[in-house]
Image (cartoon, rainbow, N blue to C red; front, side, top):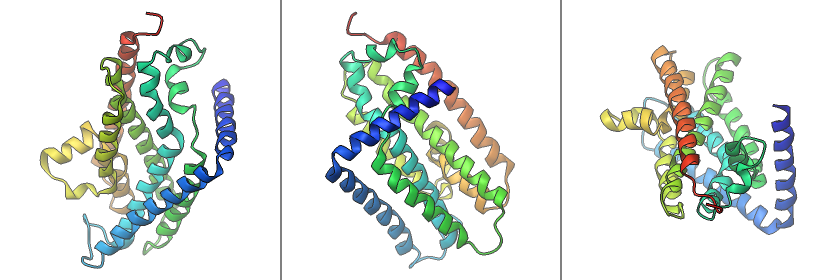
Length: 263
């Protein structure tokens, strides 16, 4: 574990040095993320000009939910996004060989080696927005409830990370740039910004179990904002364990199918 922490510290240090070399690009990306956050929040504020409830939540509760979604987006953009955009090139060009021979987990190396410093700046803003929205909730809020909500949001980050890996794995068998798959992931992933109660039937089941975008953010928000529901809690735990095991299994099979540059 200590070795991995030192290695990740080196990743972060190198990423900071690289980001500061291109300052215009660095600040432009920050402004783009701020605009994205502002639009996401603004849409919800406009909706509540026409209705007092959305998915069973009032304005203050929905803003807490949106803050959690933005926190998830900030973490994934900071830690994973740049890495997965480059993974298709590593696979198709045989450059994954370089990471397979490293004395550390290949998945750890290829999915965490780039740290998006510009997204980290906006992640801090997202954390501040979450704290502000929680303070706007009427009535007392327990520290334990807030802590559990944050933990479950971080579990949602893990879920989206696992899904991102699953969307990348077909590249080990297909001759593709992977851009279509990643674009599809981002498009479907927008469901994380919607309350789960607006979905019904098979569609809701799909977004809770198969592509658990609702399990990542909306279900944790329900446990925090609504009366406690053990069914919701065990759904989050069960779906997370299922996708963790599925991803590790598929990753091991994908590595066996990988055609290296030397093969």
